[in-house]
Structures are given as C-alpha cells and as structure tokens.
Image (cartoon, rainbow over all chains, first blue to last red):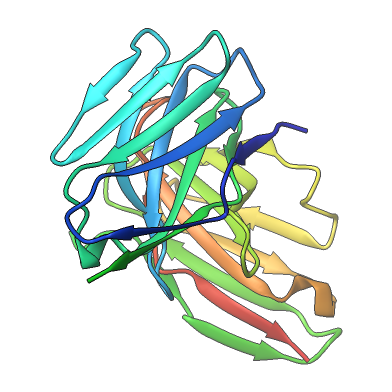
Length: 110
Length: 114
C-alpha cells in the first residue's frame, strides 16, 4: 500500500512562534496534496492544498512546500495561536485513492 | 447548504449485528468518499463514488462492508455481522469535480461494537 508518514508525532510551540510540520510521501505519481486539521471529536478540516506542478503555495498564515525530488511536504504556520492546537494530517491523492498520514499533534503553549 | 452531514453520530451495537450509516454530501458534489479512522491514526480510505458509480474500493473493505449511492446524492455504508475490530469513527467526505479537489468532511459516525 501507499505510505504517507509524518516525521514527528507531537510538536509543542510557544504562542506567536512559527510552526513547521513535515510529511513524507511514497508515491511519486501522486499529483495532489492536502493538509488537514482535525480537532477532537470533529472531522478533518481543509487547510491548504498544492498540486504537483507547484512547489510552494501560501494561504492565510499557512504555507505549504512541496519537494518532489525527495517526496517531502511541509506545512508552515505563522504566528501560531492557541486555536491552532489540533492534529494535522497530510494526504496525497493518487487519482483513485486518498492516503492520509498518521498525524502530528500540535500543542500551542500560551 | 450546511456541509456534509452524517447520521447517526454515535452507534453502539453488539457483535454480530448489522449497522447502517448515512452520509449526505454537499449539494452538487460529484464525489463522495468513505473513510475509517481509529484513535491516533489518520483516516483510512475505504471507497468512493463518482455520482452513483462506486469507482474504487480499498482492500480494507471486506465483504461484510457495502456502500451505496443509489441516486448520486446521499450514501449509505452498511456493516454486516459487526466485529469488535470494526469499532472506529466512520467519516464521509464529498468533493466537486472529477479528481484533485478539496474534500469536505462530515463530523463522522462513531461506532462501538461491544
């Protein structure tokens, strides 16, 4: 099966600092990648996506970087806030199936 | 439209019983996905529909599981002869377009098999 994994299972950051969450994927044919945020008891919530023809995409306080050479994806959150505390998943779309990583739990320390 | 809805939100059943979950996607969304999520893990893809056609099924979807989307709108996921290992959160998501579009998730149905 496919493998989408995260390097760190937990991450703690001080409020106001920047956060970086990393993800490795294994299918070089995947052409669409998404970062999701999941709070306890809720379904995953879309944060940002990126297609394989791009290497960087910015949203509001978030940036996704894609390095296809090493099959690596990262999510950068600027000025992290307490409301950012959640589990973050990267996911890859092969066109027929959708694979999620295990997740990184982000804790923001006030 | 208030987003993807799932019913019931919680289901407790005894081993061996059948259960059925319902998902109502966002209107006009062509694709509908089912996932299973266990504690501490990411969602695992089960199956997806393009309109009423079921196009892909994961090997995780044993013959006890069946999903339908008869009119291309809402979908049902049935689990027959439930086992304790079926206990999980079952998530539904929908997206517009044919592929590579953002998926909107519902709140999930938490199944507990006793």
